[in-house]
Length: 303
Image (cartoon, rainbow, N blue to C red):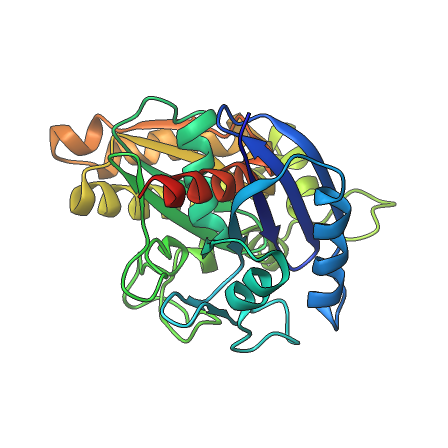
């Protein structure tokens, strides 16, 4: 059985696995992302996963962005020690294998399309709703990466051109309305507070409050769901995806998020092909980006 090496690089965790053509991992490992000397930690992880394992044919990397495909460099917002870091070339030198790179949210979408909730769909939008909001598009089985590799940044689509400034510098970005910290921020500003004894207010506690019917918490998810629905309707109108898979930590809120999202999309969407889109919750969870990185490598070996 042939294998590829899949790597997922995020601000809090590094993950790697040897993955066969069916998507099964024979060896895998994780470790925390250090604040400095990330490459040394990644090299150690790669050695751990590959030493004594079946030989890999290629390497697929999913990494937090932004990135530049032409140069193979990355500048993850939450990894300040990497700015214009040539991760593709460094991994290729280390492994002596063909190496391909994409954004971690793009790999999430590709993984869900290959093995998860989007399996069998002709075109898919994957959305990661967490500390930020990332996204990726898979069209006819292939990831749509764009000229620089940054296609699918749906978290920074504007759903209110007169809205508040986002940290990216834009105005009215969906991330400013629907990411975990921004759901929590809005709820706190409007009178919600976590239960006594809570260490800190976060989206998980907010979701629990919404599930219990706390009005401000419910309103926060209604507001966030409507923002996501506006972004989804716009993306479907532009690209005509048939399936949307939502993952990330905030998706664990379940019906607290998905029910207002569905209601808002029903209100916002007009054309029949937009209204026909299926919204699904991720089935791979944290494994999706690693699966997508493996599929990226498999596609490179057959290109």
